Image (tube, rainbow, N blue to C red; front, top):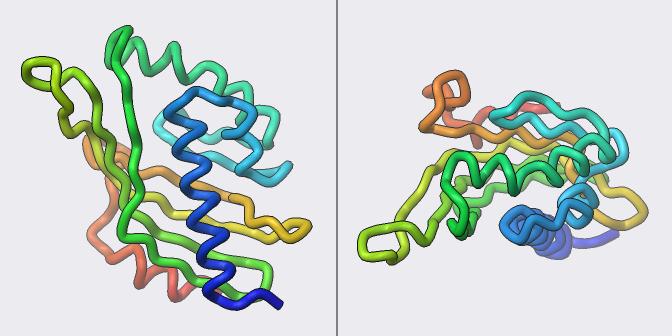
Length: 157
């Protein structure tokens, strides 16, 4: 059985692969971060199943261009990562933020921010998202409540 350190490293690797896939519009790599029956709960609604997530990820480039404009380069970052592992199940909470290249004088600028609430499972030795909810602190209806999300995670079954 892997150690907590091994599991944590693998889960953090999954989170990084997810963000690189998002930022470089790699729909296949993005979808492969989820289980076959995975759920992505994001600003545009809930997407059920890896193939539907793949299709949604393929549309993200055009969606982001509408919001940020063509030529905008976004980079997402995860930080403050809390991970709870129990056998082949895990839960994470992590803060996220994004930076983009359309700041003053064409330099970088801080974009939006929020946090993730995830449920993960180990499938054939790999950690995958079973459920990922993305909170966006700048969007009505997607903001977090006032309770500490890490404390909430610790109470999950």
